[in-house]
Length: 342
Image (cartoon, rainbow, N blue to C red):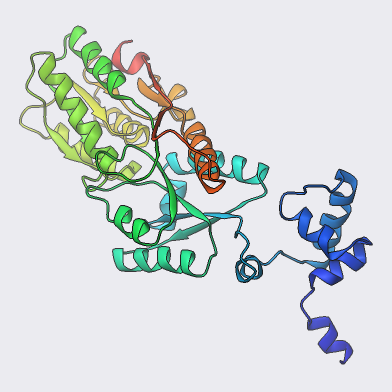
C-alpha cells in the first residue's frame, strides 16, 4: 500500500485500539454504554477516536445484530422552519439530553411529502439505522401509526394523538388553561374573542381552536372570527391585518402560538391599536421573548424540553423491554400578563 493510499484509508476500530493501547473489545464497550470500562480508559479511547476521526458504524452494529443506538425524528416540514418555530428546538433539546446520557444518537430527517416520509421510515428501520422513533407534528388520522405498526417499529408520540394511537404518548394537557384564559377575557369584558389558528392539518392546531370555541360557548358567547395562520411570524401578521378588516372587529385575539401573537402585536402597534386597551392579545407556548415584549404577553406555558425528555425516556424503556404508561401528561400553566390586562 502506498503512503497516499494509506493516508486515504479509513480508520478502523483496530487503529483506535492501537492508539489508545487497549483491546478492540474495550473500544466497542466504550461506544456501547461503557459497561466495565473505567472513566480514564474511556477518556483515552474517545480521545484516540477523535484524533483519528473515527466514528462507530451503526451499519456494522446492524449487521452483527446489535442495536443501532439511534432514535429517529422524521419531520414533514421545511428545515428552515426549525429556527422559526420555538417548539422544535426545545423538544430536540430534551430528546438530545436523554440520548447523550444513554450514549444514543438522534437521526433527524426532513421530508416534503407523504410518499417520501413513508419511504424514509421504511429505510431507517429496514437498514437498522435507528431503533425507534419519536413522533411529533401529529396530523388528523395520522398515517404513521399504520406505517410503523406494519414495520413493527417502536415509537413514542410527543403530543396528543387522540383515539386509536397504538403508541405511548406524552402530552401537555393544556385544555384547562385555555378555558381559564377565555374565562379571564370574558371576565374583563370581552365579548368578541377571535382566534388565529395554526395549520388545520395539524392535530394540536385543531385542538387549540376546538378548546377556544368550547370555552367561548361555555361563557355564553358565540366564538369570534377565525383566521388560519401557519405558526410563523409572517402568518400571524397577515392574520392580524385580516382581523382588523373584519366586519366584526374583535376586542381580544387568542393566537395558537406566541410567535404569531408577537407579530400580531407589532401589526396592531403599526395601526395605532393599543394592547390591551383596544384589543387584548394572548398566545400559547410561553417562549422566552413573551415576557420581554411590551406589553408582556399573556400565554400558556408548556415545558417542551421536558416533553422531549419524557418521550425519549419512554422510548428507551420500551426498547429495553420495560413497561411504560400509555399516556403521560406534563401539565401546563396560564401566565397572565399585561397584554390581556392581567
